[in-house]
Length: 101
Image (cartoon, rainbow, N blue to C red; front, side):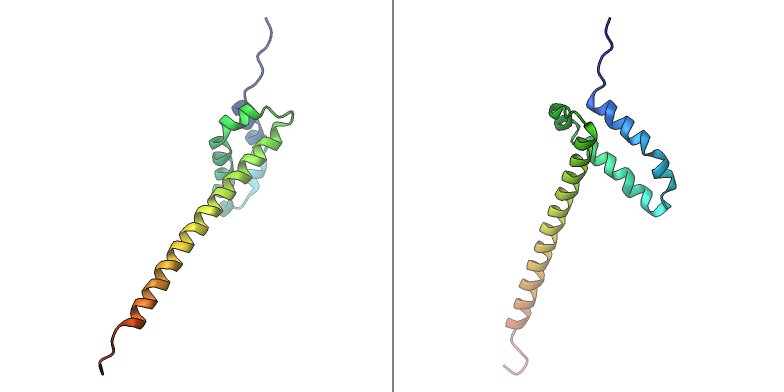
């Protein structure tokens, strides 16, 4: 019988294992960030499996980049919301009557 092809998730796990020496060599403060990259890539594993790229490393990296883009967009949206609230609060304060009126 023929050998089955590794799945996208298998290849992602292999990719992560290949980079484990790099992970261990990172300063402790960066290791969690590095691990989060692979968590993010696994979040897009369904799409990565469908892509079936000849070089799965490309798909791994695109998945990581996409996850970063999503995080940036979420942070920008949160920042915009905070800025709007601050702007509205300062407008409300400027409308309050002073003691002399």
